[in-house]
Picture 1 (cartoon, rainbow, N blue to C red):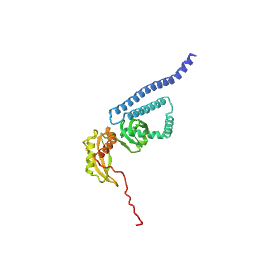
Picture 2: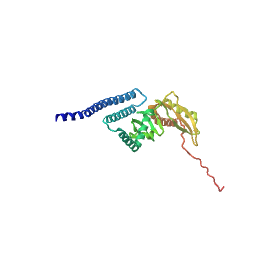
Picture 3: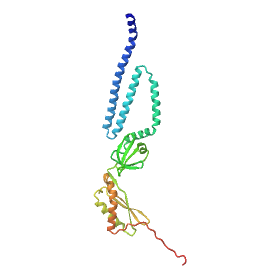
Picture 4: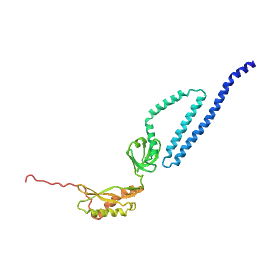
Length: 275
């Protein structure tokens, strides 16, 4: 009886040693895999922190993506140690990934657009932008959406694909902005006198810069008015203050100096056919 037990033990001993070896190797592979995945993740994130021209969000996403890819290969290697046919599993994962990709086609489009926005950075948090038919202050940029805050304190969430495929106007890109405005005076008024009044208003405004000098010139001879193009320059943070304060100041100054601001009118000539 003891002889039979000894023979049976000798028969199963190689299999037990093989399983023990595989378990030990699987644990080692798992530990090394987690260490490599964590190190790669930290390395990519640190690269993003050192590069001030690119957004940290992109590198955090790329670091997580690299980590999960490494872990996927680690688990496949572990299964392969135990004799599991991983080819079918890889094919199944590929098919599942394709199905998920087709189902989330819109989300993937937003993700791709988000990656491009974070790489090329046409705008950043804190900028005032006009994009996808919306205007506001950028409060957040993530991989799928851009969040704006409007002047009336509404939150606008825009899918990144709608922004990347359209025109983007970044009002905060340059430190100094030109503010275009148009003012009309009557044909009977002196353009030199009107220009002097406008120049005086611009010179006394606290937020309008002396250099570059404001541009004030006649732009159009309209049906009932001589139109001036007025372009003062200011710092970006004062753009809207200048845009919404100067027109009233110029209106009051023109009135005080007796310069007429015309309204559209027509001259009608009556013809008496009986005569």
